[in-house]
Image (cartoon, rainbow, N blue to C red; front, side, top):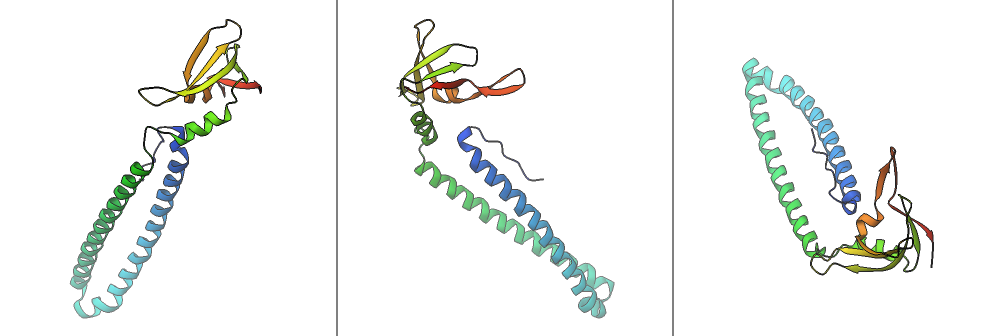
Length: 178
């Protein structure tokens, strides 16, 4: 059974979907190919080996076939694993973990001065988007219009959905643009 991957972050969702679909499709095609080759080998053994060696020939040829296919599968799996490791190393170099491109895109969608409604009812005004000095996490600074208090919240949390009475709703919903 293939390992279905669950993304750790929303950023990883598209690549996890593609990877899971690819894994499932590859496994499905591999099964079809294996069944086709299995039938081919059976026919080959029946038509060409059994007439010369009898029933013993069938056992010998199927054993050799099993060994060769196992070695081939191990070799291909090792090559694919090495390839995947190289791709991950390249991704780590290209996409440093301290800068999240999707966070920057989300931040760009927040207009400074816009007002948002919190799912619990409070109205807030966006003051700015900044980065945490230690973690580099994108943060949203906002003022509660009801109390005048200024708050800071991680951008991912500001933009996420929360479950309310069985429905998923935005934590903050834009109500006006500056």
